[in-house]
Length: 290
Image (cartoon, rainbow, N blue to C red):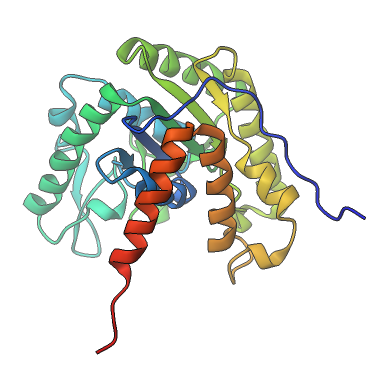
């Protein structure tokens, strides 16, 4: 009796070699998988969330447009995006709290330093992997915010974009990305994290919209879909593959899905090199008891 329902991975034109570079953008799931890639490819080959965690298609699109602009440094540090929060720290509406600091100068330094390396990476990357989490985003004045930074809810307007608008927006973003870096391959995926705050029915509706968005965009050899959402819900259909909150995938689930992703994208040489690097990384983490 087979008590397992394996997800068949779709065909694609993505192959990562030992000299390939990768950029990961999106939800915390992108950070988790990106961390697995860094251990096998090296931190200099994998750039993970240069704006911090981004959950929705609008914020991710906004970040990519900024990375493709020649004047991105001046835009990202514009006064309208940098503010002194009610918690006493300085924040950016375009970035997660990872870039926040006790001083304005410190916040700006984190932003500009990370922006320079990310712009170079996007221009050279062989693969851009995007993980969508939710279809909802928040707007402050005319700014799509990457993070609300615990500011009062009354300052924001919540927006739910219809599928046709999301599709049109992302078709344009992908067109510009392939013009910006003609050798780039793009991988789309949907985060398995469940949004309890919206109710599980609404969470499923949002995931369905994101799955349809990905399907609408995978219409050429440069764009592929990786079924991380389906692997979590079908292959790993058990609460032992979730963290204690029963919402986030567990570390074991992330490792399993990451292994599937690397098997899907790594060339034979990259698999050999990745195993070697992982062994060296684990050895470096080991500390002898004295």
